[in-house]
Amino acid sequence: MLFVECCPDLYDSRFVRKSELCSYFYGAVFVVLFVLALLYPLNLIAQSTPHSSESVARAGAMQKNHFQMPKAMTQTRRSTAVPLDITNLTPMVYLPCGTYSANLVIAQSGIRIIGVARDCVQLIPADPSLPVVTIDATNTGGIGIGYDEVSELTITCPSGEVCSDGLKIMGRTDIYQPNDWHKFSRLGIYGAFQNGINLAGRTIWSEFDNVEVALARGNGINIASIDTTNELTFRNVRAAHNFNFGIYVNNAQKDLANGILFDKVNAEYNGLNTSLANCSGIFLSGVSQATITNSYFEGNCQGNTADKTSAEVRLTGTYNQSVSIVNSVFNMQYTESGIYNDTIQTTGTYDGNKFTGSGVNGYTIYIATSHPMSQIMVGDNFSSSPTIVPDVNGVSHVRTLSAFGFDYNAVTSVPNGMIDVGGKNGATLFYGPYVINGLANGLLGQIVSLTALNASGHVLTNASGAPGQIVFPDGQNRILNIGETLLLSFDGASWRPIEGNITTQPRYVGTITTKSELPPGERGAVPVVDTLAVQGITPQSHCLYSANNQLASMQFNTFISPGSGFVALTHRAVDGAIFSIFCSSN
Image (cartoon, rainbow, N blue to C red; front, side, top):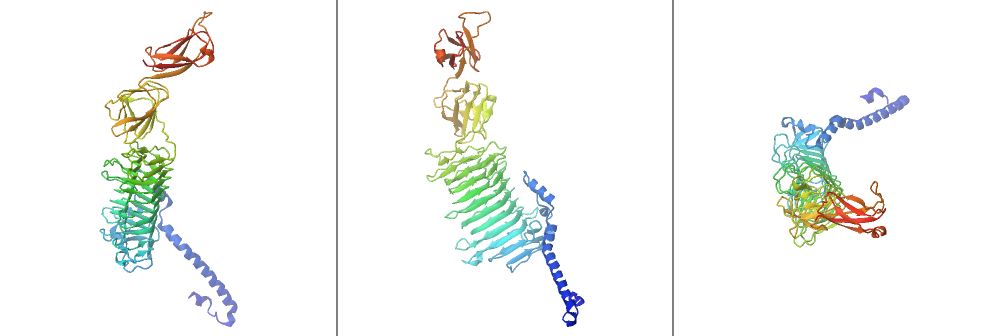
């Protein structure tokens, strides 16, 4: 119509000039339409995306110890969902904004199911007893499937319902059947799914990027297959507030699982099941090679009392070979440990990690392995001293790449004769002297250094009977004096000395430099008294002095006497004679 009205005589030679004008007109119209075509999808996406202030509020809330449902989830109603029936999948299925009910099965290669935007496209299960999306190679024989993609969707189990898996990969495990090279990006999987993501069959070279899984009644991400699950990448993935594990890898295949990468993974407040054994944000068992890097862990396993091994990252079972945990943050909030590894055969490196948080009853790093081929290398980690439990032959299987540093924790009082060493590896005693009957809140294999800073005579009671008592081989008490250090290890019931140069007697040392001032009104060879304050000394103590320079060695008629909190050196009136003072309590 537009063509006819503007140029009725386009092909008439008498209207050449007019035809040229119409050509320019159509060129301009084409340009305008092309620009509008480009801008329209952007406008659609802008209309379907939450406002920036809402997104910021949601992100802030999810960092705290609760989970705020995405707005789209709170508005989900099964009655308003549109049935999605895709019986013959085309290579590209594009979903506009909306809520759809379906149980999609991808059983061929090269299928892409993509929504216009993650926050405005929702899938809920048409049948809650079936997964919402299944990639199933079961009926493809030895050919298998590959190169499928699911992106830009929110998969939801509606509030008040109990659902099967959100996303499942499956196939036959009794034959060679590829199910590989899949891609999952910009997905949100929320609600009471059995597992948010369940890798139940073989899958290799598959990638999960920008995926969040929360509120599952089982595991957030579940990898428990007897078939090959290798070369898997989890990048920018968050698993939070799932009832059991955030990410669970327990592979029973004979050649183990390898090539698993967790990069920029966030596992928070999982393990709401307080009776869950081996509770953790990430659980690993049956692994040949895996790396956790640039990741963040916080507050997993709140209130868990199952077996006292809960941790942000838990390694256990027979094999965890070449599992390295580097450059990650462990924000411990409750009684969970940071890294807890009691695998029989295990190797790897723990380096560049930061341990922080308010939790005081867990280990930062715990290692107890027994296989002759086990070897863990522990590098520089912030605010961590590893707890290492040797095997029955006394071999630790751990090599530290940095100096074994102790934390500085000031002790200025010892109520009821007990020092709380929960989450600590060093205690420095100020003032006193104190009577110490035990160290409270110790954990098996924990090592603690006790140091006396500015007072001598701290009594370490042998076998006091208190929880966390200290036991010395000869059955005698020990005395900790200024500058002395005692290293102790906890065997689960009592603390026992590892090394130290302390004795059963208090020792006091100091230096006196003489002065020649005479008492007022005195002249001649009148003795002069110089004193040295020594906290804890009594008149019953025994003291000696020793000349420390030539001038002191020339003095005679010099003697020393102890008092209450001081030592007095009587000498001739002379300046600059230096004497070293040594005292014991009796």
